[in-house]
Length: 428
Image (cartoon, rainbow, N blue to C red; front, side, top):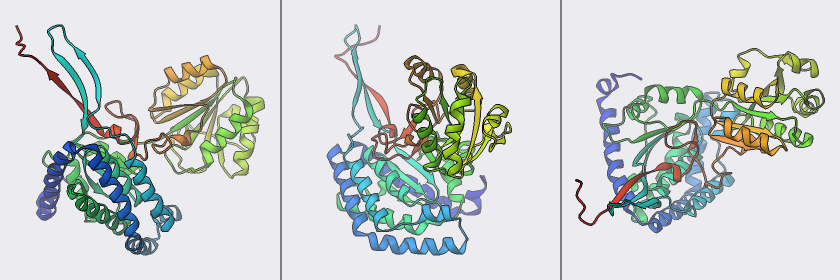
């Protein structure tokens, strides 16, 4: 981050500070609104997205044209593209978030002290959230809606590739908030492509920004985590493992590994390393490998795995540390559950870890001893998603150890405060 940004571009600095001030004012209003008002606002936002579909598609066409001119990869172009079905899905997602239980004002715990003090722990919004993300325009809607549901204000900074699409989506949602009598500045989108805007957000906007959530590639998340002066909710890498135990159902193992790796290879919940118990590897590993190879997945294994599957190439130590986000899978044969736990402890990133086993005691040990935000027992790692968890949507997956962990939905965008009721008690 260029620490001289505010000197070189005072106009941008002033604009970002002003956004922060408006967001702070809006967050104060949002936090005290009845849940029903936020629900009405979310439903209006969904209808506004549908009504603005043609305007959003026209803006998206501009982004796609610029993307082609920049020769963006087919994968990036696919993430950027919108059509009528995708816009309908965005609106449907907003309505799903509107139907979620409101997370604000919940009494999380309550107790009475011997001196008569009645103490309650109550959920409250985080305040002003900055969300920095890359090319997916739908994130604009999902992130804004989760912040509205949880009574927060949000400053969105999208990738330059999706600025036209995201601006059209944000304008529709802001209009819906205003028409519903809610503060439209609860949703603001940074309008410049200047990367210095990110630097300003990472400084905290003179104390107006309470938390930053990065959603994107490793470079973006690394920069945010390294340079932010405010708390960060996010993950750097999703190096997900699946351990196939000696007590695994063989066909289940074949199906789960194939789905976890190949359903979508470019998402953070995609399987990157397969661990197989040495007791069943000679018979089971070739069966697991066959459909992967047929699906054109490159396999990189340790020496023992390569002996069992000649089509494998020999893995290096770097493979165990790599989040491929591609049709590549590293494979290691381990000495039972202890070997799997040790490997994950050495190379895991705390995102999602999975086990395939019919042994309840082994499954319980795996769940208790493996350190990750999400533990899957006989399920694909591809389910590591807030929507699949029933959260309506997610802003991202948190691998941190403070506050939120795992999928970050509306509930994870709240914190708590203590409300203490007394009857005139004084402390001796």
